[in-house]
Image 1 (spheres, rainbow over the protein chains, first blue to last red):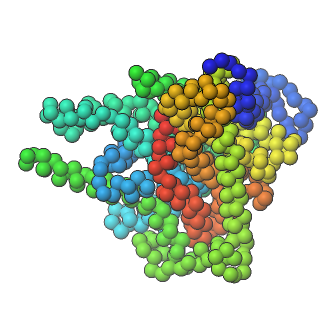
Image 2: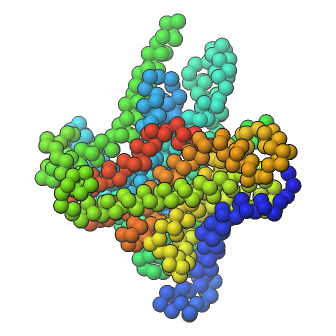
Image 3: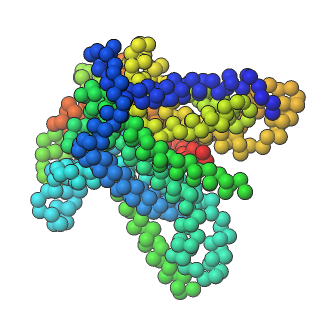
Length: 291
Length: 291
């Protein structure tokens, strides 16, 4: 196919949106992060270099937020991989209820994060929550557990609700990978006398490897960026800030735009590292298909 | 033979337990939220909460839908609720109507046409996935206020499209690349122009994939919270997710109303997800696995 000027017509709308609303703003944000932006005196811009970054890295609140974000991400990753895989194996089995289960599995993904937070708030509400109610009926606790007081309790509840939303996508990705494993592999393993566990260990899990990396990277980026669930579970101004809520509060509440911009660039660098791992594996997977 | 039968029995037991856990995990929180939404206000003070409410009431739903389903005095909550649902619907339809052609044209160019900068556009599109919203939103806010695009459906729509472009474009790209090119080559020899090839050869066999992309855009737009929180400060474009978050912060006492509002707000995306689950699941996996 010869190169043609008119090809640009097809890509132009996408390119305009992509540069206008993503790449140009990202560069402007980088500029904000190295100046002293004061909205009351917009003309009095002064270049401050890396001062904003250094102040952030010295701020103990940022390190608390970083630990909180990391904790949420790790719990979400563990739950998403384990339950995503378990649900995928469940959906892979041909039974009469398979169709209904497939319809149900996707529901949490289709719900707004805000509503997701509300729903989990009532699961863990100290007085009217289902979890405390069940625990009390089973006589496992006598005093209601205060799920929303204490840093680690809150982080756990937030992680559960975020994992709830991430698991559907993981389950359907794992399911697609399971369906692409050739039946012959299992048949020859059965002839060799392998049991169910051996099949899982030596065929299923190795064949799922590329999808593991995809699930881990996409889930990690989602978990780092989570805001909606936090807003409706515990509110933005709580002591349990993550990096994202710190950026929001610094930018939109305290109007410290330069600090917020610098912090968002720091988070972006972390996400880029995760993204590179993702892209490499997507290409590797594509390579396997091409052969 | 005996051994195999016993294995099946254990397998069945494991499967049943898995299904029960899956049901509790996936729809348990939603059912519990529904229980609270039909519990009369006075009964939500009982602790520990009974597993089934002793009395039930539809008052919260009637209050939110006043003037929509039942003739009645329109209260503040019902008014806000109706505004939010309408605004969300308008945003979703706009994103589909404008986003689908933008992504279709771009996917065609990226998979079938040759032009300078193609590889770069492809890489940049992939890279947008790691950019957090906060790294772009302050400059966008500033540009939008200068252009008068705050509280504007068109401005909001462009930001949404910029966020959903990568997935939709890949979805279409991987579909186009799976199609045999012979027919298009023949059409070109007959003198068809690229636009004719796209509209008359590729489009008719791409409706299912385009539909999957549209569904994902609909649900993702409906669930947006942070973007409209910043770009839609007034009722003219404020979507339901932001209105629901205001119920959470303002009606801290009325638990039932909060849950009823949240559940009503998820009905459109969840119904769509259940009905069209096959399209959605194939779209989500293709978008995530094949970059």
